[in-house]
Every structure is written in C-alpha cells, then in structure tokens.
Image 1 (cartoon, rainbow, N blue to C red):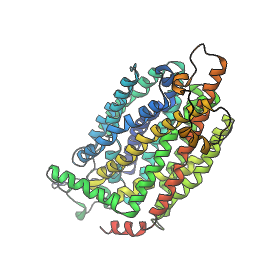
Image 2 (cartoon, rainbow, N blue to C red; image 1 turned 180 degrees about the vertical axis):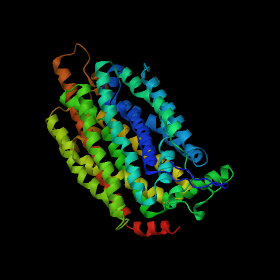
Image 3 (cartoon, one colour; image 1 turned 60 degrees about the vertical axis):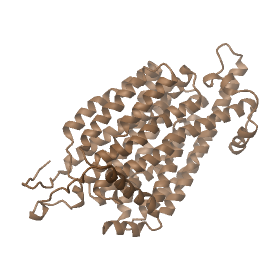
Image 4 (cartoon, rainbow, N blue to C red; image 1 turned 135 degrees about the vertical axis):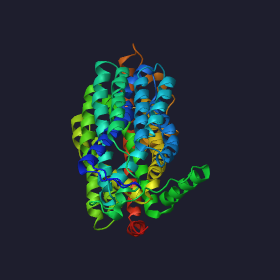
Length: 499
C-alpha cells in the first residue's frame, strides 16, 4: 500500500495487490462465518439422535435461534460501522462468534445449545455490513459486483469446509468435538484481520484512482454529531431506497425468497443423504461439501463477473441474470431429489447451483450502488435484517415443521404418495399414531420390532425428500421478482450515477 499525505488529510492510494489481500482476508472471515453458521446442518442428524430432537427443533437451531439476534443487532452495529473503525468491529465480531461456536460443543440440552446459537448470531451480526462497506470503499462501482462475488464466495467455501470437516469430526469423534475444532481458528483470524487490514476513507473508490494531483487532496467528509434522531433519519433514508424504489424492492424480495428456499432445503440435505441412503456423516459431509463448494462457488463468481460485464451494455442484466438462473435451476434441483440412487442425485446436484447462485453478487452490488458511501453498511444491515429474519429465521423452521408433519402422515399411510397429495393430506388426515412419540429422534426405540424400525426410517426418508422439494419451489418464485426488478433498473442506476 502506498500512502500520500498532506496536512489536511488525503485519499490514500492502495495497490491492486493490497486490495486483493484485504479482499482475501474478508473472504476468509466470511468463510468462517458460514462454517460456524451452517455446520449444524451437517452434524444435525447426530445432534437430533443424541438429544432426541424433532426436525422443527433442528430448524430452530439452524435458523430462527441464530437469526433473531443476528438480524436485530445487525442494524445498530452497522450504524456504529458508519462512524467507527470497521476493521475493529469485524475483528471483535470474529472473536465472539468463534468463541460461541466452540461453546456449542459443551451443550448438554436443547436449551443450552439454543442459547449458544444466540451467541453465534450476536457475533456474526458484525461481519457483512462493515465488510460490504469496506469492499465498496476499496473497489469502484464498475468492479463492485465482482469484488462482492469474491467475498460472497465465502458462502460455498464455508458450507463446503463446514460439511467436510464437520461430517468427518462428528463421525470419528463426536458432534461436540466438531463444534470446538471449527470454532477456535476464528480467534487467530481475528488478530490477523486487525493487524493487516487498513481503514480506508469513506467514499474512497468513488474517485477514479490515478497518480495524485493537487485536486486529489481531499478531506473525508465530517461525521455528523450523534443523536437518536439522526440515526433514525439515516435508517429511514436507506429504508426508502430499499423499499421505495421498484427495482431495488424486487431485488430485495428476490434474494429473500430465494434464500428462504435455500436455507430451508439446505438445512436438511445432509440429513436426507443419511436418512434416504444410509450414508455415514463423513461421507455425507464430503458429498454435500464438494457439491456445494463447486456448483455454488462457480455460480457465485459467475454472477458477479458476468453481471459486471453484461451491465456495461445494460444495467438490467443485474436483475435478468439471477432471474434466468433461478428459473433454470429449479427443475434440475427437483429432478435430483427424485432419484433413487445417491450417486445420481449427487451427480445432478453439480449443475443447478451454477445457475442458482448467480443472484447473490448482483443483488449486493445494486444495493451498494443505490446508497451514499456513508450509508452502505446500513444498507447491507437492512437487507440482511429482512433476508435473514425471514429466510434464515423461517426457512429451516418451515422445512423442519413440514417434514415433521409429513413424517407423521407417512408413518400412518405407508406406500408411495406424491408430493402434492402428501402435503395436502398431512394437514387434514395425518393419522392417529404420533411420529414424535413412536419414533423419538426419527428412529424406533432400541429393541423395537424390525417392522417398526423400517416404518420409522421409511417415513423419515420420504418426508425429508418431499419437504426439500417443496422448499426448492421458492426459487422459481424468486426468479419472478428478479424479472420484475429489471423493469426500471436502467433508469434507477442512471439516477444514482448522477446523484
């Protein structure tokens, strides 16, 4: 990094190598963010059996109990990030969420595990809002979606490492050891981030970088004095942009609905491979981790770089690319979960994520480009408030709740029944025999007759398959909103460029 300084304070010039290093460290932080957030999906079956949980409770642990404080605290932390050192906030947040992830391994009951998951959510609330703001200050608008796609690559990377490492650790040792081992490295990363990453001036990348001249010597705008009235006014100003502008609103709806389906189905994909194909946790972690790392990783990067390239011709491609991708991905996903051989399911699943995950980077890019530099962390926090409260908070709970009802129906009505008929019948004719009582933890009690063990396992497998398929249908709905976002996006972006 090269700094040029004057008495009034100047805009420093950062080398491309240094910016890449910063982006790499933020990517690493986001990777740990998703390892600690999603590992519960991989080891959830072991937790379910050990603590005798229902799928609704698993959904609460992986979704709502994490999302509640994560979403609520995201906004005040983002407002703090608009005024204070963003690097410090990210580093401290890493310490908190990594520590609570490790503590999850000490939980002996559903209540204790829920409390520790609340703590993980508190820490992770301080990751993305300041990170998005930092990236937008390091990278100019025409490269912003690409840079944010690299940062968002932490989602598939974290999911992959969490699945592979978590599955192996849970099988070879225990699910408790898995939590401890994946949580502790984040403490070291927090120190590295604090020591290496520099805090750039707000709006740094809005000026095209070139060798410093006299007119480049600028003073960062003064921060307005703190008051509650000012804070609420700033939040309201960002809210009006996100929910009051047609293209941005539908981008918000698209990412929220797509994420609802993704979090909901993803929470039960590893348990599905265990329940339907009787695979071990280590093998399931390897399968789901490598699939997610490849397909979702490619899709996330393609979404950023492709839309930045196509956006030069027309900004509407920031909406059309995810619209097309989500509509293509939906039937491919469903076809994968209709297979009776796990190898064929895994092979097909390599494809749809490439189309599906194109929605992340362009959405983040449009949101960041729609607000002023000192409102970017707030914009991300408000986006994540809506997205995670509804999608992360509700998606796994919805799918788990649906699976619980479908499991009771299939226990009482064995035999092949289609998805639509099963969902309809599960709520008006579930049957008298309680699945939770008959099959605690999804399995027949020890010493039960072989017929009961087979009935419990069969009902659990069919219910999980159908619950996932229902959740996947949300992708097509999200694609519709992205198509609607393309209407007026050109005009909106031109207005922002001239603001």
